[in-house]
Amino acid sequence: MAELVVKSDDIIQNVEKLNKFLDKHNVTWSLVVKVLSGHREFLEKLLFHPIVKNLHSVGDSRISGLQIIKEINPEIVTMYVKPPAMDTIEAIVSYADISLNSSYRTIEALNAEAGRQGKRHRVIIMIELGELREGILREKVIDFYKRVFELKNIDIEGIGTNLGCMYGIQPTYDKLLQMSLYKQLIDAKFNTNLPLISGGSSITLPLVGKSAMPKNVNHLRIGETPFLGTSPFDGTQFLDLSTDAFEYLGNVIELELKETSPDGILTEGNIGHTSEDFDWDHSYRAILDFGILDVDVDELTPKDPEIRFAGTTSDMSVYDLGPVDKNKKCRYKVGDKVRFSPSYMAVARLMNSKFIDKTIL
Image (cartoon, rainbow, N blue to C red; front, side, top):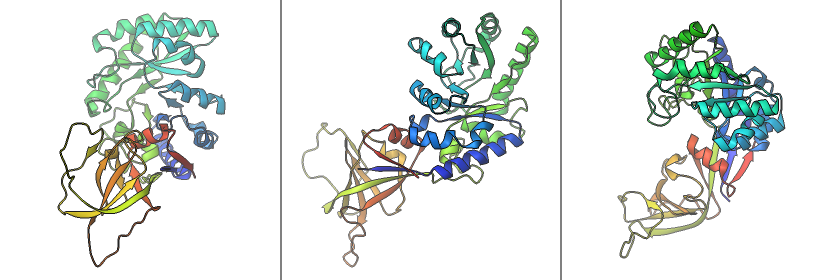
C-alpha cells in the first residue's frame, strides 16, 4: 500500500522556530492542524509537547478534529477556523473555544447554545477585504459589532480577515492597515479594546517584522508553514524551516518496456488524465499503487528528477522512467518504492484517505 511518512521532529522544530520568530515581533498565533485530518497518533505527539503551551490556540476546520484535540488535552484553547454551519452549533460550543464568524444569525445561535451549556464563546469577526470568501462588508462593520456586543454569552476576541486562499489576493500594507483602522474605530465607538487583529494565514508570514505589516496586527492563523516549511506568498522556504517533513512513497506494481503513445481509437470514456506526448517512442513504464481517489498527482513531485508523470486513473498511476538506453539497465524493479515530495494539498488528501498507510516517525 502507498505510504505517507510524517517526520514528527521536523514539524515540532518548525513550530518552535516559528514561535520564536513570531514572539520576537509580538505576534501570537494559532497552529492550524487541519492538514492532519485529526490523526490521533501524531496529534498526541504534538499536543503534549511543551511548545504548544506558548501558542494562542490550535485550530481546525473540522469539528471531529477539534473533538480529538480536546480528548487528548482539554486544556488546549481550540479555534474553529471557518464560519460554523447552523446544524453544528452545539458541537462548536462543545469543542471550540473560539470560532471565526461572518453571520449575525450564526453568532446569535452560538450565544443561545453557549447559554444552554453554561459557557462563554469567543468569536473573531471576519471582514471582507477583497478575497470574496468569508467576511462581512466593510460598510456594515459598526452595526454588526454593535449587535454582537449585546449578546451576553459571546466575547469578541477580535477582528480578522482571510487573504490568499481562493483568488490569491496578496496581503499588503494597505489591506492590513484597514484592519488596524477598523479596530481603532470599534475600540473608540464601543469603549473597548479588542485583543486581536488576526491578519491572515501563512501567506502573511513574510510581512512580519517588516514595514509592510502594521504594528498592531498581532495574530495569525498558520497551517502550511509549520508543516511544509514554506509560505504560499511565494512558495519558497520560510526562514530555515524543514521542507521535508512529509514524504510519499508509491509501490511499483508493474514495470514494462512500452510504447509512449496509445494504440487504438480514443474515446471520452477515460476517467483519468494523461501527460503531454513524450519525445521518445518507447520507455520503461512503472505503474504505482495510487490514483485520483487518493491524491491529485499534480500535487506530487518525484524526488528522482528523471521520472515523469505519464497518466493516472482512479487507483493506479503511471510514471515514465525515461527513454530506453540499451547499455543501461532500468534502475527500478517491481516491489521498489518511488518517492515523492507532496504539496500541502497533497498531504491534506493523503492524511484523509483511509487507503494510504501513515507512518509517524
